[in-house]
Image 1 (cartoon, rainbow, N blue to C red):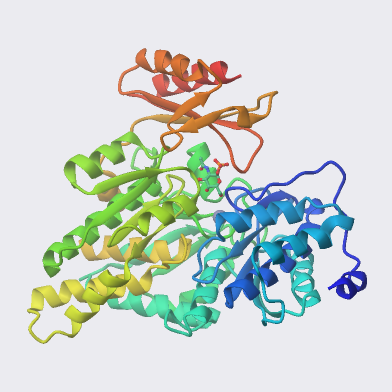
Image 2: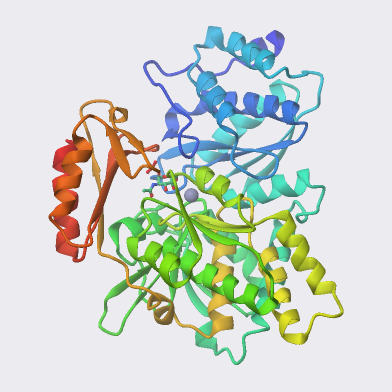
Length: 524
Ligand code: NG1
Ligand code: ZN
């Protein structure tokens, strides 16, 4: 190892910069990341040796500005790397160069890693100008420890998660190529849309905002596989605009603004793992269909299919504190599905969703997917094959089977979610307006507050819905909330930015704005 290190004189850590492997890996200005990338290549190699599996490393900063970049590690089944290894990542990223070898040895010892094991690491990158050299630094890190690499080049984050899962399940999940991904998803989509009758060209047309990123590129590649069953009108395709600038899922959700006008539109984020829908009505008003609306649409559809198939499987929806109160009420009171609330960050939602036969999880910002337990998948497959299944039941279980194939169960995936939503709307003969009318969102406001002290002085409990410190803060929030009707508010330190996030909802937009403002003052 020492020799390899001498050979690879990698960059030093910029002075005074401490990075933490946060909600979504490391993320900061691209100029600070060379050494982090190299070290994540080293860490992924160790993780691969430890798990005796292929590990993924994705170079992206998702919805952040183009100048930023970041890196995420992907575990064998395509899920986010485990918490203990997030800790190692932080430790390694912040080590001085001369203690790096010691830190590595510490991890090897703690994890009892056999260094003679082979290692394999899959690497992918988004379209940022800095991604090419940064992903090369990851590849160099892996090679310096003798690991094997496969450079997938430009792929969406969920495509790389899919590749890792395909590889470690020896092809059971699909073929680990971009073409394999398009084939698997498009076949399932075409099977589902066969069940939608008399679709007009208008119904097949969807306006897609690619955020000037990788999602646009991959949508172009995939379109021929969809055989005109979906006609994508692509905007912000990267040909002229800047990544995530005045476009993309985060812009639409946070600014509550449409970068394009139409009856059914969607926006991806910079690495295509998030999606939100929206439309402009005849009066020119913007309507957002966010992650909560997506979770409701998909879980309603799945619940109906389960009833038709006569399958007794438990379906649950996993949300975070940011879920609109109306969505939670609708899911619990009208749909009567189990709703559970976790901390922000998809790894928490993913984990909770694994507890159910079918776990639908979505963050309000449009990051999410559906997980089917092994037992549930087996029951569905057996019923498809059973000659005694009558026609109505057979249709429902076949739809369930295709739905499983269409969904990227490894992580939230804008392309897969989009195809799912399009298929559900087509099968149910619904427009975006019909979908929006399922329930009415409570007006809400999200604000960011920059605090002088360390934002982590705010400690929360109850899935981040209540603050336990600093003392008195929660009492103040409670008093403020009481002044408004149907109101709710909470604060939490962001895991990706140096800010405290404030969320408020109430019966009117004025009240939600005013409550958010008052709570911000209490935080400041
Ligand atoms: P933070 O910065 O911890 O709030 C944000 C999003 C998360 C998640 C991560 C990773 C909100 C309120 N928060 O986390 O949902 O997507 O970024 O991208 O949208
Ligand atoms: Zn993203």
